[in-house]
Image 1 (cartoon, rainbow, N blue to C red):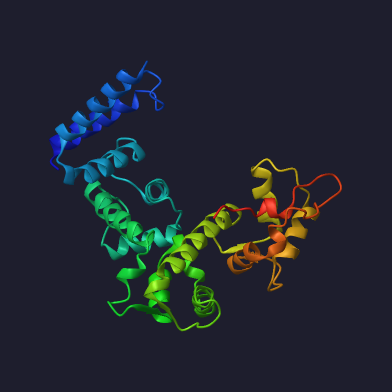
Image 2 (image 1 turned 30 degrees about the horizontal axis):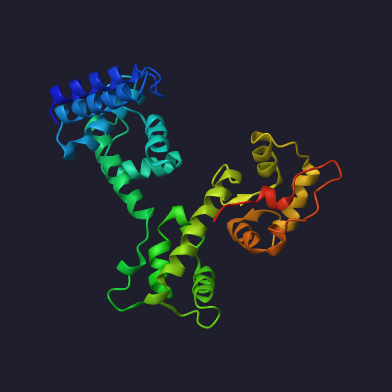
Length: 288
């Protein structure tokens, strides 16, 4: 995209941001439909379909850099959080820039290069099509499954060790086989992976700093931030009951196992205290 197109794109983005995000300026259905048509004409008039993604990244760059021609590492971290939906460390960002031979004064082309690549990678990591991974052999082995899941943080791949692989295969096969998954059982495996993804999303609510562990202070702060009236004694009870490996914290393995415990879904589970603290299964609830 040339410089003129970039200026036009920024002008269009600025104009669109002046409208209310909830489209409350559209008085009725006909007005809303007319607004959608107008916006699509703006987009199609500025760029062809293949350039929409680049146009978007160009616009994001200038919003985060506040109109400057270059961006620093801190602004790149903010962009990563907004565009990818994940926070990374400064060291990781610097390593990424170094691998692409990009200085700490990031230009628009640099920005598009980085996030064009990252967004493509995230799309791949956020989906798993098991039928495409067996090489036509009609089954997935332990190694196949681990190779598919381990790179994907969305599915808590960083915690997908050999024991987790065997456990998943065993569950798919009803305890009869922990070596491979046959093609006719791919749907079962996909269901378990989808559930794992949801459990990881719930775990991240507590694991604020992303270190894979939740201690009493982390949990207390998370529950307080959600508006829960909870004491440190109640929080410690959650830790004690959920900490299966007894290392003093809740890791993803503990959290994942907790979701499978019948007592966590029992309707008549006793409360933490006589003052009416919520049931533990409410603290750990997740839809599947």
